[in-house]
Image (cartoon, rainbow, N blue to C red):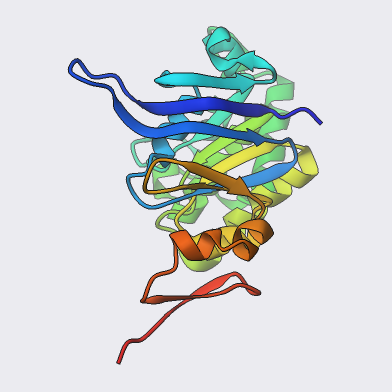
Length: 262
């Protein structure tokens, strides 16, 4: 199976007048169809920067992002809109639209200049609403939804875009724990059942280790370590980069607990 996305010696960061600011460097990894990959790492290690680079929102400092064997920079914006959808954490700015209308925006790559929805578009939107389980709030104003409902609606919008790749920046942030689990399992099912390539950043490491097919770990020194949860737990990677004097890690259950110091 060919990877959907491949990083080749990728270095991310920002071009400044005085000196480039490197965030992460020399990354090599692949994302496969049908898998949920979780991107973890401390704050400031460049998770959002990496997602923006993969989505072609900003250029790499060096190296390449390959999307289906072509450099992502070689695609037009129109082509990319049919290949990659992205879900950002901050969606509170959306006003005066129903949930259905917000999800319908995911059809914009296919609706042309006037944005008129065809019968097929409406069928796709309805199917996406059912898949994420928000039928009861489909006609509600988007701003009246709970955090969990809004995140599910934004995921439905991404599914409605019908892209093979979905990137998500902390989709479980600010959610009540049961809602975090619901969203994680829903994304895992999307990858497995629909063959989507899904990469999401997340701070809930133990949840990522239990649900993800693959883990990408960005370290404090700007490197990317990747592997299955089993590999990274058994080879000591998680213990080395996450466990501290205040944290204990159960390798078998892949869960963390607080170590109380006396």
